[in-house]
Image (cartoon, rainbow, N blue to C red; front, side, top):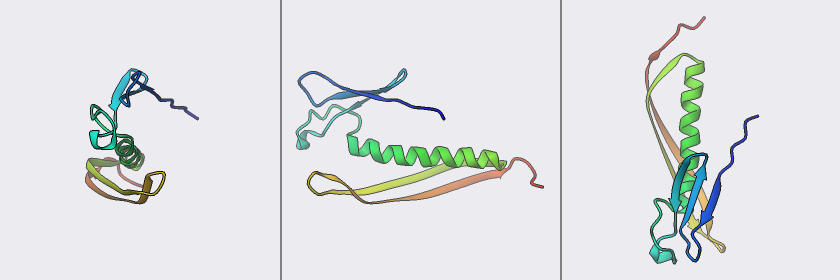
Length: 108
């Protein structure tokens, strides 16, 4: 089984953080209204929803390829309400639209 590791490091004295996986990085921060600096591309909640949508999209391409199906594009929309103490995602949902190009191989 393959393993993936990510690392999140905050900038000393601030809520701004850099997330990395191998050579790729993304900045993460809370909005100014939530007490952050507002400097990150995404906050943690947005990254959570993006991760769910990204995984699902990747799975569609992988499974379609196994079946000889060409995929033109995928749209995954992921939503959640944020409430509670501590604040957490609730009532999560997602919708998916897939446009198929054509069957790449014939099925027996």
